[in-house]
Image (tube, rainbow, N blue to C red; front, side, top):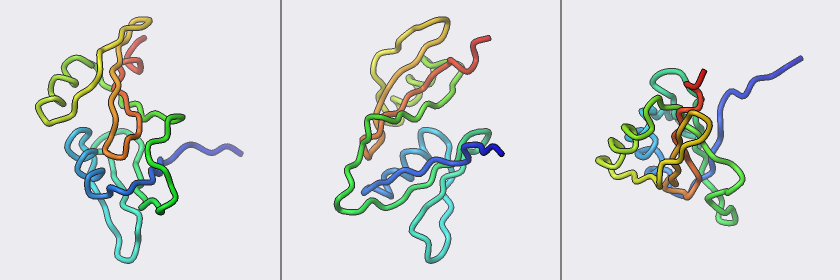
Length: 120
């Protein structure tokens, strides 16, 4: 038997900021159910749904062992457009025929945009 990764859960103390961040910059749409603490963010196209879960007082935000990587064909164009909306990426790196750039979300989680998925 096999299983596929179906969604990614992110603990946060900044629920509203995270909803806005992933909606504005990556096109996710929030879905809330009555009496459910988790907010599901659905991608507008292909992609992995994100689940936002309120973090407890003892949980530390911004894990450094996991990075959310978003596939984009043109990293430079994406970073330029994101800057207009207030998301500033670090320098664009080039490696083995693709490029990528890094940033952080409002809960200090590492994120990246990368063209690696489009390299033959």
